[in-house]
Length: 342
Image (cartoon, rainbow, N blue to C red; front, side):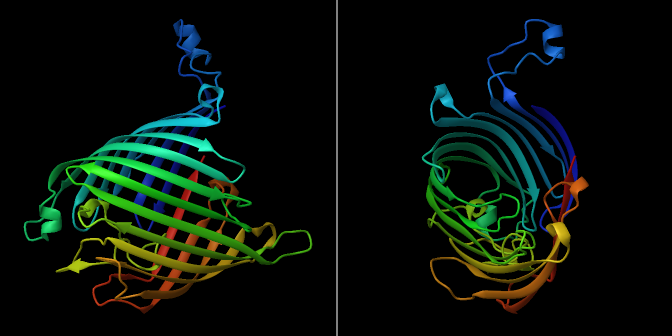
């Protein structure tokens, strides 16, 4: 029930990272060791079906350290409880952002497809390495910033696979009210839909059309570290990570409104679907308010390669060519995602 995973990865959004993960799927937080032998033998802290995970992800531009515990059937009910503590540190063009916090989530599975949850997060956000000539959006939040967020979330998921869905959909709707040094709301809707267009007689070789749409809105008082940013592998390809959005003198300050829409067609090239080509059209915008002034459009193609010994997450290589962009956007034709766990 336990595993120790070692990994390394590199991607065009966050650079080079390593990973060490200790994961226990039959944890028991109340099963304290009675002796050294009890602890070394593996009998302690096991037996209740809880999940415990410790993860260390050191990297050049991003590092993350997390410890989490989850009780899937709280008091033998349909409710679940998750508690996590984390430290996060990332280097951006404009600043260095760190987050030290804790998160508490109470969830309930409503049926085979719907899940509802409420989450409280408490964070200290540190903003450092800001130049004196940067916009006031950054200079006004230098130092430590306290945040407490209260979020409600509803998720619908009927996909046939988590790693490579070929049928079904995933819908996530969330609303969060944040307070502390700044008070503001956050609303997000994220939707994914998958269609099998063609397949072999045995069900393999599925050609898949994948649709993705996301809408986000933040209140007028939202600080720069909680705003929306566009661009990068998981956003609008063809642009740098955080390279799309409102700009002040060359500094990206994020927006209070985000709209993303993407189409991707996947075609397997070899047996067992281990290699498949993709063609995509990414569109969207990030704006200061609810409006559309510069709607970006990128067309491109890519390759996905699944290497079993490197895990089931495929190596992703994409080339995106902006068709329409804003004058202040930062372009990046090639984006990639490589990583493995063992």
